[in-house]
Structures are given as C-alpha cells and as structure tokens.
Length: 219
Image (cartoon, rainbow, N blue to C red; front, side, top):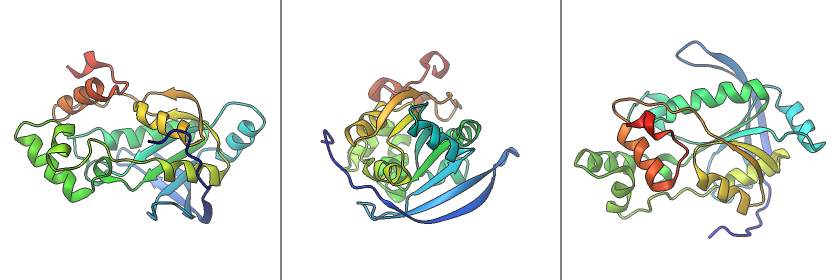
C-alpha cells in the first residue's frame, strides 16, 4: 500500500517552547512545532527534545541519525494513566531517552490505532467480553490497525530529517516510514511496561504483529 510513495514535506507554521513535567517529577523542555501541508489535515505535533539542533547538524554531516519516536495519541493512557495499554509509560520513557540524545517525538493524532476515541472505548467493551485488541477492532467493522504514517514522514522532512534511529517496538512504523522515503538506520525497542491489566494486550501485540516485546516478561 505504501511502497515507493513520494510525499511532500510539510512546512513548520509555528515553534514554541514548552516546559514538560511528568507525574513522577521528571522535567525537561520541548520545542513544540506545528505544521502546514499535512495530507490528513490533522493537528499533529513534533517535539524537539534535548539538543535536537545539534543532532540535525550531525546527521546532515553523515553522523548518527537523530532518535525519533512516532507516538500515537492515547488519551486514556497518556493523560489518565490507564493500565490497559503501555502508551503512557512509553511516552514518558521516550521523552527522557530522546532528550538525553537529541531528537524528536512526533505526537500523532490517531487514537485507538486510528479508529478514534469512542470506537476505542467500544473496542474495550468487546475486549471485556473476550476479544483481543485486534479482534475487537475488526468486530467493529474497522481495520486491525488503521494508522498511516504519511504525516509523520511529512513532518520529519519539513524539519530536515530524512534519516532516523526509530524508537519503537512496532515493525510497521519502520516499514511505512521507509516506504515513505525516511531512512530508518536503526530500530530501537522501548522497555516493556507490564501491568496486570495489559499482559494480554502486550502478548497479542508480540504474537500477532511482531512487536519487539520480551514475551517471558509478559507471561
């Protein structure tokens, strides 16, 4: 579907500095960027973390690519701390790791693997009746994963990034970005953020879509 697609780069419409502080006390500063020209018309954000400008300069000179995580919005996990998924802890981990090395977190408005917030909660109800996270989406008449990373590639190109070290357990992110013209020089897994409520969720992601998750920890 995404093979060989050529995408137009987005343009940065605004940059603002935002101090970040997480519930555990970790704090840093992000350069938050908004964009014009995104194909899907959504309000995605790029957060420049750490010495991201130096990371860009080094990459342009042939050095190591900047560390980048495309993170799909998860209101329940990122904001309310839901333990049905690992999204909130992954976001917290990614911000610190990227800030240490210099790079970007792309906050993508594609809740529920692209099906939206209400549909995601409908899927939760089906999971309570026994379906797994992918089966529930399909039972709602939706795709298992409807996320499209075109906007992510457009943002990266607009920033001046065409090479990344990808912080992600999801091979589909790497595959789509590569097909969209982003050179994924390395894929680096996040930690496994296991809870009693998400053990089945993590196990299914590992077995069904080959996420890089250490299954012995998730048994």
